[in-house]
Length: 458
Image 1 (cartoon, helix red, strand yellow):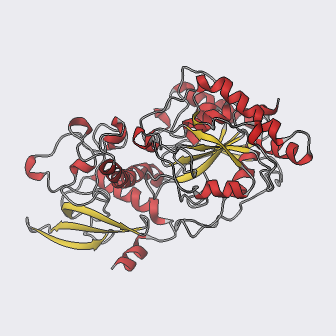
Image 2 (cartoon, one colour; image 1 turned 45 degrees about the vertical axis):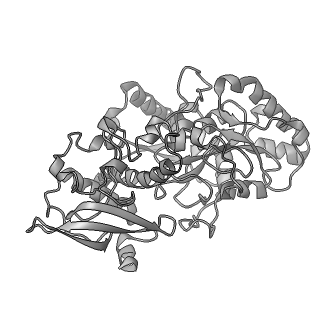
């Protein structure tokens, strides 16, 4: 059955002439139209798509169609970002990754469902293995489309697990490459310092085939980097594979059944001849998620504030919770700031997945205009905070009202984001210090370190 072929099998069959591209594409569209009414992996499919529109294509993908997450622009095609506020949106040009796929001989099969803006409002997609269960998110449709046999490959995005999570839920291979491996130009941002483009495939070899050809450096994405080792032949290996079993600090939060199943898989792999080593992460590893949440909160507030200002009242509640009008238990990042644009001074909404590490108790009215910003490395900054991002979120200058430890008055100054007083000067908690440490280590290995950014900004 043609629809069951993996990516490399389909490319090989097309190149060898075992079947026509029109027959292959027609089989995929027939399957999608027959089954997607229940799975709901696609938000858009071409009305006349199928055998009549397929034509032989040069390039390593040989005309194979690919699903594109609806967070990624496709020129002239409805691209809603999962939001009713963008129901009529049709980008003028393809995202970099889509243009790259087309240049390699692939075609666009359809737009797969995403949660709204890759955040928490789910789409209609159901898990193809059990329709009563979630497919995971935010790249819900891409994972479900590959699992259901609608396409052999799909693009997704990941900020906080949005490729690997739905891949695990739907039983397919999800691969998120290193930051900057695939340029993100034309993909709607959530947190530009954490956003990635990844792929979904039916096996590891297909994922490697796609990533090895998609990964490139582009002048359009200043975070792009040349990743050594891509592409790499998976078969070049001496001896059995070496596999690590990693138990993180949150291991006990998983259900007993999940932990038992993972340990059984490790035991089965060892019995099959693989070398399985138990790994212990360094202590600093446990601090990274907290720092990443702070970074996500600050940058998402900046992104959503502009969206909501442009299209007020047209986002779903989870995304709308970031708006300046958020109140009560869903008080948003934007409503906690004391003026200026959203950015590094933003604070996650209480009651959200991001905000759970912050104190849920409201501050006294006398202090609401002066609260420590967890997104600023130093600890002596209070008062109104705004961020003016330049060069596509690469650098930021933060205007902060810094309060001297020996004075109750605040003197406003413009400083680089990493140039403030040492921890403890204004009574920050140990939790805030841990978050700052996590954020600092999260960024330490980036091409441009915080100290280098300060030098450039000063």
